[in-house]
Length: 122
Image (tube, rainbow, N blue to C red; front, top):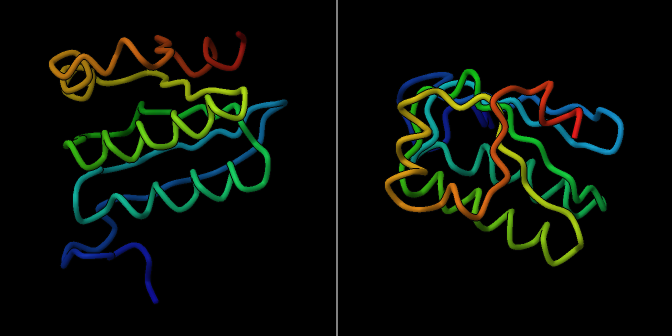
């Protein structure tokens, strides 16, 4: 099954690249995170947590859109990571994505960094 098209007729609307850097699992999210693509992020977040990786850094520098479903995926990962003694760090959010977090108040429950380097350097 081509996971790049979950729930969407638009091929490649979301891509998630995963790598480990030091004690962080870095997930680079590219495209649109919404109801149709949320599982493409949920699955690698859950896999990282299942593997004991509790410091998750989400590189949002190429995330073009995030709706409430995408926000809920990140909130769910934050709850699991926090319970395991870790956390979810959001890095380099574009203004349109940052606005969703600001409007909902979700920015207050995440550690937000201006850049990926800043998130990894902490």
